[in-house]
Amino acid sequence: MSVLLKQVQKELKEHSTPEAKAAALKFVPNAEKVYGIRTPVLNLLANKYKDGGFDLAKELWSSGAFEEKLLAAKLLNVICKKDPLLSLKLVAKFSKDISDWAVCDAMGMQSLKPVAKKIQKEIFDLSAKLIKSKNLWERRLSLVIIEVFTKDKSLHPEIMKRVKMLENDEEYYVKKAVVWIKRNFEKGR
Image 1 (cartoon, one colour):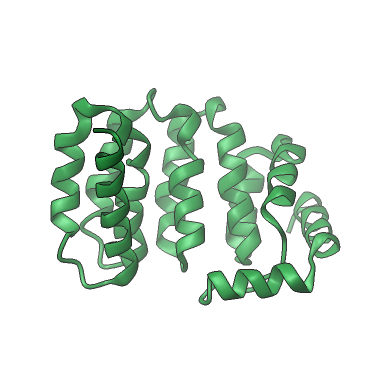
Image 2: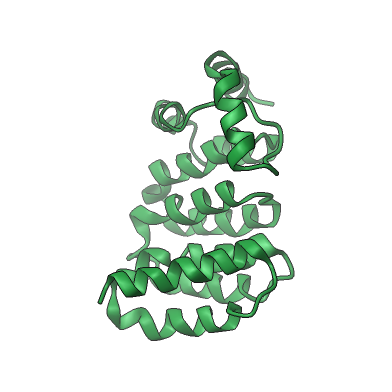
């Protein structure tokens, strides 16, 4: 464990509150090892510790607490322009250890957003791989990482192919992602 990770963990403990922990457990009942940190604090910490780079993101992810994983996703958002393909590779690696919808959505919606257009093909390739996973969170992530492209009508046919592949998925959180993407299409009309 690096000195930097210890410092981040110390700050997480300092900023934790019983109210934030109760809220996290209410909205994300299967969250693991919850500190109890509000999102604005995580956003500030991602910017504060951006110099920790990809190594810190990996350490945070491996450490395994709910907010540490969220912070890893947010940190990738801040640093992904330095190496978009490494960021994508880390999202793919981290996807195997997602255990709840909040971390899944932070990873999918935030980690690659600043570079999404630049690595669009690679993101769609990862989506195609994840969609076939037995892991429900990887299947959900397969749609969440392409949600950013729902505003581009030229990509709707490709996105709809993926939606159709998961329309009959039996997992609640995958079904929710399907509904979410379809709703985005309806908004764009």
